Image (cartoon, rainbow, N blue to C red; front, side, top):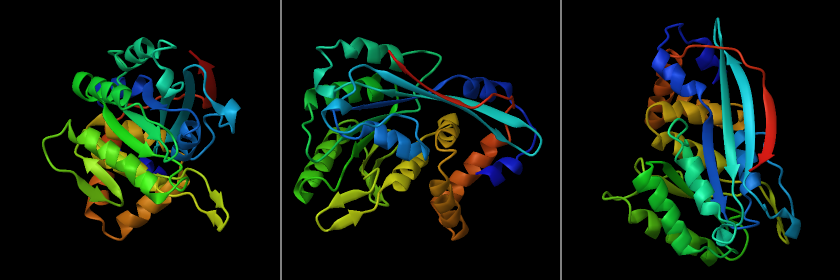
Length: 287
């Protein structure tokens, strides 16, 4: 990624920079203890959200985790800022009046979220009525890409994981007219959404430790599905995830047509960015 930046020219298009200079938002929803904070950290390749364990790990209010940073081109510096909105327990949204707040976050005219990520694990309950309401809000009303993710995929039985994914697929199918396609174990629904299963950190079982799994595939699936400047915004979100970029560059070098198209798109946008400087910082606030 850094080499791509260094190769970029100094051509500038103000309207694209104006879009990128605004806060970038990613909304993360799901029931308690499904690993939302851990997933955020795994996507970013660094600790952004505080992840807890046990009963005390339940997020009681909307948390906004803000990251600001900068990266260098050959002669300039690009600044970026993004916010992860980590929501409270999904099943208690009515009780805590989260729906209006979520509408406020998603519906801001000058800061459309890059995507909405919904998390559920094989051992948690999903309120399908709430989830369908959320998908309708994001897809039909706000045109926001939706990633439905089965987290902690090694927890529980295999059939439970499949049940979560089947539920996700059935819901997303309601919002598309064309058939889905599968790539790298990710089920893609065009520019509408995707379904994936991940383990954001090593999983300890009686038979040993299973490595984290599916994160890079999820990142690439979202990158493959987004359009226009949203692709570049997502690149900034995962900019410091060295593990992902190492794999991404390797796949590009071995001739993956899909990755080649994406890298060309990324380079194209970087050639059109107006550059500014900003200091890097990490903050977390409660809303």
